[in-house]
Amino acid sequence: MSEKSGLIQELEALQAKAELELKNIQDSAALQSWRAEYLSRSAEVMSFFKRLPEAPIEDRPRIGQFANQVKTILETQFEKKESAIKQADLDANLQNERLDVTLPGRETTRGRLHIQTLVLREIYRIFAEMGFQVYRSPEVETDENNFELLNIPAYHPARDLWDTFYTTKPGVIMRTHTSPGQVRAMREFAPEPIRVTLPGMCYRYEQIDASHEIQFNQVELLAVGKNITFGDMKGTLEEFAKRMYGESVRTRIRPSYFPFVEPGGEMDVECFVCGGKGCSVCGGKGWLEILGCGMVHPVVLRNGGYDPEVYSGFAAGLGPERISMLRYRIDDIRNFWGNDVRFLEQF
Ligand code: FA5
Image 1 (tube, rainbow, N blue to C red):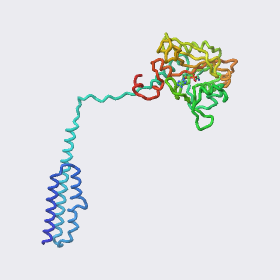
Image 2 (image 1 turned 90 degrees about the vertical axis):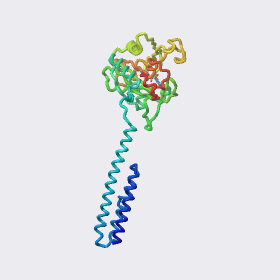
Image 3 (image 1 turned 45 degrees about the vertical axis):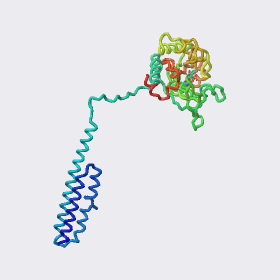
Image 4 (image 1 turned 180 degrees about the horizontal axis):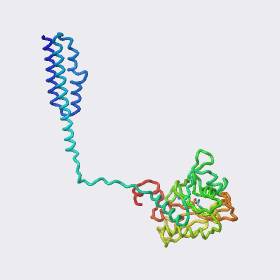
């Protein structure tokens, strides 16, 4: 009998202790450790079930029943406390993080097209109005297309002007200009007449400065057909400059040398900074070069599949970054691909 009352007394003391501790608990971390202490498998209440064989056999059901009762009471109290703490946490959160619907919303930043995407599209549009369609050609090119077929054999000194980046595959390079696309277009369309623009990135092993990048866009222009003259080229390029910069723009074409044209030239636009007087931006010349051009060389026509006795053509290579610099008065080419949003968001 004494053993029975002893176990029950112990249980009663444990229940009182657990209830007192639970009463003082204020947060869920403390509540969880209370649960581990009094209600887990290894908790004290549970040990009473293991100790039942210590009691006389006739007392065991009563002690077991009482232990179960204590366990259920503690579980119920635990649940009550748990929901009380959850409610208190929720109330505190609502109090601290109260939503003020009158506050202005956060502004979302809108994406936009890159200045060069816009300018390239404008160049395509202007030439499309004159009957030129866009023809894409690859940025990774063969030495043959980039140089040989453009009348620049391996020993030719002009190769120095267009040094580039080489791939690990012999004879495969990053193109230095869009001119290799000329041969690709000619070989696809010969002997039909051609009017195409060939846009895209070019790569050069180059000293970077305010007007030179190692990676930049070009747009090649190519027209091939019967009776195409230097006058057609001049008219097309002058019309382009007017549509790009306005009717009053002043341009000039000077003689220049490119192995894949004969005769060759370069077109300048009057310097936007000094208005033609000469300054540091134009190197004192009063003019800024925007493109190379000329009549397609007979060797190149033949390489493209056209008989130079019957067909003629003109080609030009424009630098869209330089065209944007002139149009928007940008004094450093490095702004275009430097990814500074303060520059890019102005367009
Ligand atoms: C050429 O690349 C010739 N393929 C152009 C050509 C085509 C001539 C068809 C005749 C017939 P050039 O190296 O000058 O030529 O480059 C042409 C244009 O590309 C330049 O006027 C300039 O606007 C731009 N350009 C050249 N190098 C760079 C560079 N490092 N950074 C930015 N733009 C450049």
